[in-house]
Length: 154
Image: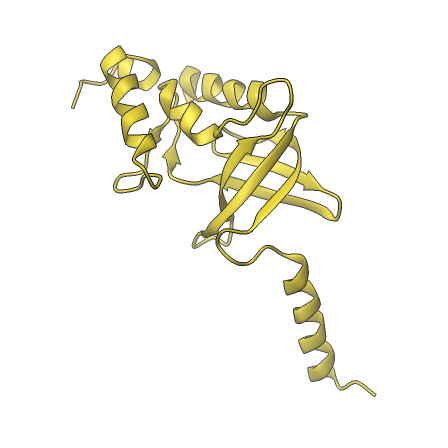
């Protein structure tokens, strides 16, 4: 007979096996909700996850926040997508790269596309392996796109 302690240990192991816990793990599914430009709901065969896009900061209020959310919705809402887990933040949210995986629009990194459109900026000190976010941010800044239309060039 299982003791309460053994039962809890077995339940934790079963839960851990169902979750992508290690950085670099990927999960494919369909985006069923865009809560903000930074957070989407990704549904997969066994459930769903709230996914926060890694390395970006989008406006939280106003017209640019709405534009950024709509931009993400056009890219991923109702479409196949892939999240690549980078880790969890202090609040326990899954922080991931999010990529489209759709035959119609191809594979696109949602965070990169937001930054390139000037609808988000990269988190200070964060970048992808080859500096793509920094380059995209600099291009958006120079072109005066989105958030850079009203901010001074730094």
